[in-house]
Image 1 (cartoon, rainbow, N blue to C red):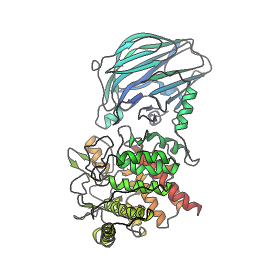
Image 2 (image 1 turned 30 degrees about the vertical axis):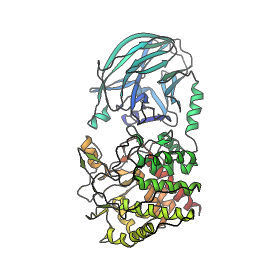
Image 3 (image 1 turned 90 degrees about the vertical axis):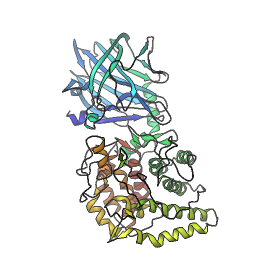
Image 4 (image 1 turned 180 degrees about the horizontal axis):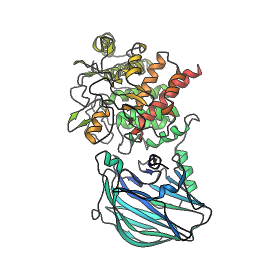
Length: 583
């Protein structure tokens, strides 16, 4: 097993926004990794409780370490060498071979409870004994701790309880527990080190479990709630039931797409995002409506509608003080229309009363990266996709009035007509669609594609501009956010925070943009089969990430799973590719 394979990440989540995640080797390479990472608040603040478990197997009078860790200048121990098979989805499973003895380890999280179950299945000679040493941190998944920064209270009974900062972790394991409080030092997290973030940590252990004469099959239950003593099989069946409604052709990807869905909301991405309104509203069609999960979609729409203030929805669901966004409410109208198109349930829409949406400050669109108040893609003026969304919203309101037999207000009709008359003058210059008008910015970015892809497109001649997109923005893993010919183009998403954010919307490839590109292309009579074949590298993935590098987009960057990446691939597949193929 090479280092790339051993560092391949896996993640399982539940409906609470809690998760378990690490690498194939169980070497944590990020602060965000942990066997149990608990969501502790409505705005998705998460705490790494159990970071990892040392696993020591005593076989033929030899001690074998199954664990793998990064320390300064060394990887120790090298338990990854014993891994012969693994599968990261839907249930992460790892098979170790030790002198002919096979140990199959599987891990699952309860779909509704913050409980993680690790199952061991031994085939061959049974080890003389097995030792498990839990390592704890009880800290934010963004940070690290050093010895002495945390104090722990231990309660030893049939169920081991460890408490810190008012949070209790419970562990139920076979064998006898031996109290031996200690610290292990200088764990390194190489991914975070490369990102210029916290990357060195000490971890606390309360002791260890020793299983003398282990049986062939047994389970560990780790809980931040109550120990349930459920069987691993029952929890596994419940977890798989949550990952429901999958299509055979896209089975692996669709399983994983459910990982971002929580109770009445959608997580923008793991590991560090919570419930972002724009992301959730864009994601509703692909993640929920295409699967017939209409009640869940409606509940999310109702939740976000209740946050609206003066017609504006905040950027994040639980941050009611951040209404500085130009497009989120327009995406809400889009999501309501999509809900209606699937369900035919009739809804009223708030009436909007502006002609063009003028951006007076930055960042206010989906291209919102900034550092220290410096917006990397300010796009001040008239952003093209915001005005395409605005036209779509007005058209949607007019459509709903017709459905409800309501006379549309004359002002809405006039504004819509005005946009139709003026859009070309505002946004077409020298044969290109401007990214921003007034002041004019003709940077080659993908935002103008929304003018062709929304339910009510303001433009219908994508063929005339598709060649430019294909030559400068298109890759098999998504669309670049800026042409490589532009002096502002950043080819790599790497380095510290500033370096990464400067590339975030200035070259990085975004998979979610495949959705509008496919829709616009199908509408311009592009072959559905050809499109699906071109993007097959994405559709074949299990985990669809947030972004890729602008050049040679092969390795995933950013969040390992991103809601709208899944959503737009699924939406465009079911609404465009599949329908076109069936014609």
